[in-house]
Length: 383
Ligand SMILES: Cc1ncc(COP(=O)(O)O)c(C=O)c1O
Image (cartoon, rainbow, N blue to C red):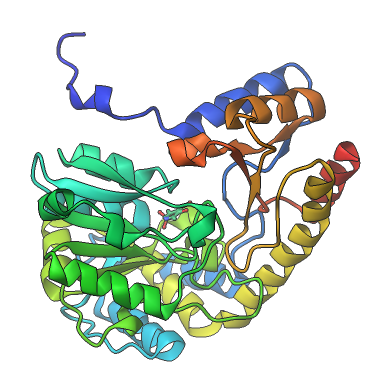
């Protein structure tokens, strides 16, 4: 088809779609697949949030186009939540914008920041959308390897000066998908200094900042620096409140970056349905204990699965944060082969680490977003 754009060739097929296809094949051949693949919480959204949506949806004035940047009430609720949870004070008018989930925001930010040929620094392994955002915006992704010896934090001092000069955007994500690693406030401060020194936009994706399994609290980027220049941080209600299907989140930070992201979005989408924003306000206002309850359940699942993985010879531990177990394979074993064997021999689906980049080889990721009873069944099969 001569009319298809060249950029389609640069995009990987969305890796989780490939995983879904493998699962569908196994199901079609009668396998009872236990799915540790995609990180999509199995637990329902908070009932009060559902109730708020239903009520708000009855009001006809909410059926029209929403304000592009989010309603004033929504942006204020985001600012209040940041102040309460992290002691960060942002201006809801200039430093906050509503997102239809963070995924679109990550790509739209890249479109607003990156010009063709610019470098985008992307952790590797990582949530695949950073790479896609780089490619879609015409940029050149440059990997920041995340290795266990450095606690899965990138070595910023090893970034080639010529690459840093060409870079416009750097993505970071802590607590981290897929490794479960956490970053200290000191590391985030270093990263923000690096971004300002090289005049790079630093986007911290904080999708799992409330998914904490060890009772700690994890620092956010905006709290790590009094100076907001060059910094933007993405928050999502998806994992915090089991609201992946609702498509709602927000970005906060440098007003220039919020403006750039907003300009792209003004031209490409029309904002978040107002009743969803009203329900999201309810989640941020009153559902903190709901999140802690879900985190307790993820921890229980991790405590069940980790010993079984270790008994198989994998290196695995209970993550401090996120609902992912990043399991290291015995020396020399390739991620794709191992995943295939798990599916063929045990009917267990885990994501091969290579889905997250070449530095993910030698690992498989188990997402704990399936009923606890299914985790028990998986442990029995593995035993
Ligand atoms: C690191 C990371 N960022 C962002 C997202 C997407 O979140 P949202 O549902 O807000 O688009 C995910 C989803 O898995 C993720 O793992």
